[in-house]
Length: 486
Image (cartoon, rainbow, N blue to C red; front, side, top):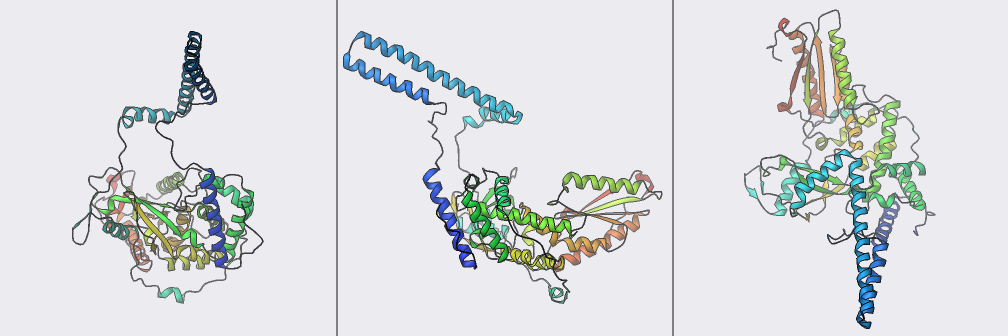
């Protein structure tokens, strides 16, 4: 690896050039040393050096018999050929036993293998073909690849509507706190080892297996690049290009509607490492300085699904165990396309209001801007297009950023000082209201719902009315009028 570390990274152009050199260098290493093609269906996985030696000797004895044409030479060839067949049979048996041993270690694996033998092994592999899509405006059926791309882009990558953000300019922002954001070599090395080795690679075709090899100089290069990204508050240009794989949702009656499809975004593996490091920084800052409410779950230390359910159960039992006979109702709200509709201006403003470091705020701004992606399905790939909305669901950086995004909603609900408990699981808002009278609970929930609607108007968010759920937590339902509406 011939990359000089003497030149300091003083500009964004130099940072992008250094990353280009790193990617090209890794691609050359992959091309030279790594076999990219899959093994043939005719490949003999059981084959070893003993098999090769015995076959070579058997072929030589056959050549000797052809030259000499004697009975002794023929008998010697037959004897050795029988020995060859025995060696190959033993190699096959040893390979089969080792595979069965690996399958038996995991109970799930043996059942997957049995299912494959019964069903999939008898079928020929076929490439999945996308059906025609229906254009929502005209109900016209679209069959061409380019038109399908337009429909899917409209579904996956939404554009922002006109939202009132006037109160941002008038808000008072406190001085930001100072944090140590330097990244060490050990931190980069440990982060790269945490990423799964067999994750799919993006358009650069660099998998994590390459990074996980013992390349000391590569770690030094990445550390200097990552520190430069934080110092210059910049997200590298190469990290902003992704490839989006379009997949069909399972168990759907038909696939003519774009809502029956979902997508997986493939990112640069070095971008994943940087994102994990920044997640750790942002999470530590949020927890140390109590920037997020205790009611907000997911993407936080020791705050998982089980923690959420345990907290809800404890809250309900605490309400029931009061001397006053309280009854509890829970209103559950869900934000539509939560990650696709995040208003970047509001998100960055919230990070500033929480007094996070300017380095993190401006890096997040660069992270969210000027991103491009291509769509791939039916063995075809579209052109790169800019993505303005969406903060990439299913990535921890997206989850922690979304918790900051809706933190103001949780704070507004908790500031009402009425008998409610708020529980937020990313984009699911649950309001637990309690009182002696159901009529009072309904008024309380209606008041909280109005607060949620006002927040949605200023944050370009939409609550799915068809997903509203009202759950009653009552020990003796006969005491209360369960038909009261909100």
